[in-house]
Length: 235
Image (cartoon, rainbow, N blue to C red; front, side, top):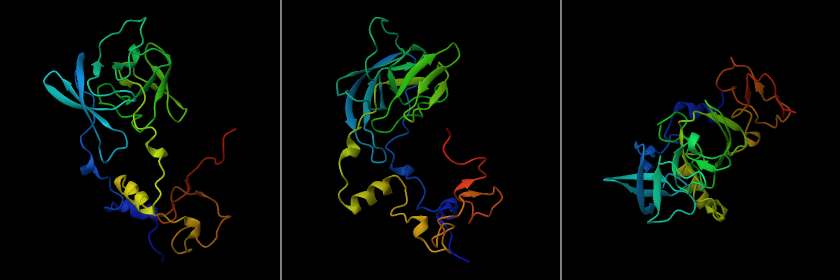
């Protein structure tokens, strides 16, 4: 009969593949303020994230905000206030996409207005404002693809901090294990072509086997390109 392949075990929902939601320091969202100024009191590490967080004091409340490069303690974080058109907004300013000039790097973009920020949150990443229209703003994502957003969606100006963190070599397999454990990813992972034929569709040296599989295939066979209309690189 064979053993359940990785796809089947992941679908079961065991602890091996579940996200470590308890490890996150906070539910990271923008403050629900239209216009405000806050002071960065501290920079903290979230063990479940790669990028550091800022502890910002807004009026009588403290909020966690994703850290951008170049921001330090005692700096000011501005939300929603309009800037002088002759001067570009500084790093760490939180504005609607409609207020951000073209060519500015942004991160932590909202998918829908006031959802708190969903996209571009990993170390060293940023998007670029490419063009604007009355009903949409085009942003070039880190993947080089262009995505349209509602002009009311907010974003933070700058680049996510911690971009050089991954440059340091892991050196030991144990360090790699703990890194993958914090991200709830399976490690070490065996290549399917190195498995036995009973354990995986690609096992047993079936290098010439097609990757395309039917949409109606059973779970143990549904791996590779599922119900693909076409395969290969687009020219």
